[in-house]
Length: 178
Image (tube, rainbow, N blue to C red; front, side):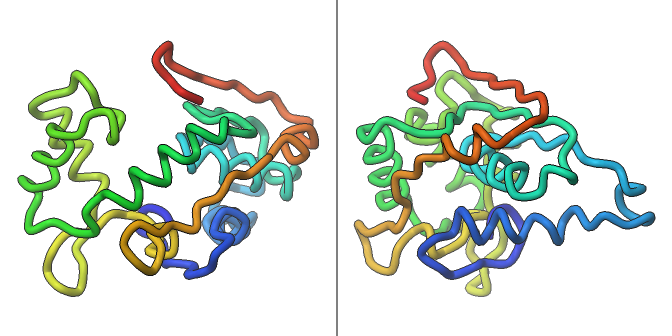
């Protein structure tokens, strides 16, 4: 349900999306030559990578987590939920996405970026919708079914994190809330 993958459409998207990763990393001779992969996950992608590594330890050699932790402070989760619920669902064109990023730097994590870097981030964050507009590369289930609602919930991933027997690198910026 993240990026360009299909939506999972459930209210526990983290676990289902982590399960779906196994289809992206099939262990056969044509894909990864049977070798474990190194997973790098940012934000929600880090949560998914953590869940995947805990559930498929034979398939992951190392894990890099960027701007995510096994659990989040309740206030941080509430802010993320508000941001997701208040973010427009779609945009007329890429210029509108860039304007949104520029006008909402704290919501997008792109404070201080301008020009081509901001445009490139915007380009990789959206995809064409059936309506012809641009929509986020995110499972619609994460946005909720009505304005102001979102099913993203506080997760405690410490039990899964403690299962990991592989090297884990955690990267976090000085201004990160995580």
